[in-house]
Image (cartoon, rainbow over all chains, first blue to last red; front, side, top):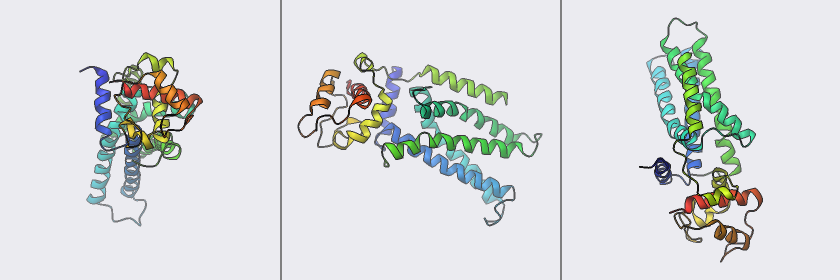
Length: 156
Length: 107
């Protein structure tokens, strides 16, 4: 299979559900952002904040872990299209910011996952990494999905 | 931290390589349009009749895989055709749409 055909196959697959590859990315990123907000909220509860939420415990931890896993999975098709098909581009400010910030996303993700497992680090490391990751996702959403919904169309 | 930095470098290298970027026919490159932006404009201005991705939408003909060249696309946009009004897009948008239509119409 020629490499270009992979892109075509991906487009065919995506357009069985969405109107275009851009629409697919906009919605997948939006879903990932919602799950990232769940991540931040549940993490805050685990750290003893937001006491109006249900009691800390296994359910909150489980929700935190699974929302993270699902958010990660949702970003993969977006990563595939953005990185391997479109690549790093700087035609205007929006795309330049999106490309630059997007480059750091999986690096910060890996750092965050490693920090979770490293008990030797100080207490602020994990919340900082988590908030940085959520912020990066927020910027990526603002410079892509929001732009798409407001300037192109709001629909599948 | 080092692993995270390595992932950032790898992501950047992968983004520069664009390994799955489809080869855009010379005609669309010559038109100076941006295929990606063209897809956005197409979805906004053309997909209502030609369908998302140009697969045909009942009103306008299917463009995907139709083998249309840049001259024909340009003429259709500028002069209109059937119920399609002339000058639906112009300027940069026109160049971007032409580039996009060429990219999807290549069989």
